Image (tube, rainbow, N blue to C red; front, side):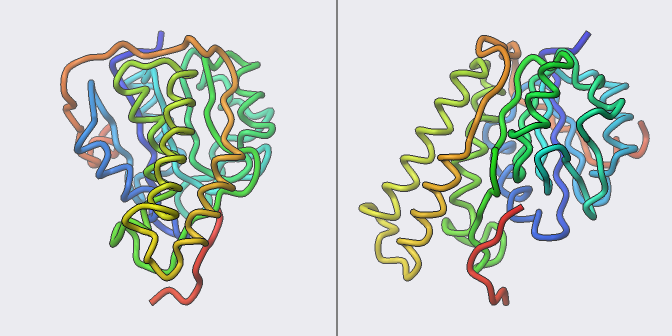
Length: 239
């Protein structure tokens, strides 16, 4: 039975995924609760993820990655979850949040149909700003500060519906920051606000809105190694 005080975070780095993963790492340092298993970089691979789920039985799973409507990939775009695959059964009884393109379209509903408590994700391409290095500025982090608010809210004990509302409100705060706040003088402020508007518009939640994990004590973040034992010229990109 999934353990409500245990959370698994899948944080690949390559193929621009460091942009999202580094923000989540910072958020976990500030807001992590319960027992957290963080699989980072090369450890964010299918075999390590399976072992972590089997050993720790997390109630909440968050993953950064690339995606398609029926597919979620991890480090080096290795396939992890696909509609109709046996791994869908591993998600049964859990809250899932995938920060990736498209997975809210078919994969998320399929996971819920197979027994996941709730799913949060995006139904179309998820865009982000890459004109500055990962986690080097508010601009490089802004869409992830909004999207990943859902994971922070779930860790704090709020239910899936509340977490979804919290991330939409976080998007609004970030949009306001670039349009009317301190960020309005940034040379790409209008673009940043537009990217946020697009990502907000494709954010979805499926499943039981009342699903939640129990709040618990401040985090004990497990080292990544435990999983083994167990210059940009572009301005924006998408998963």
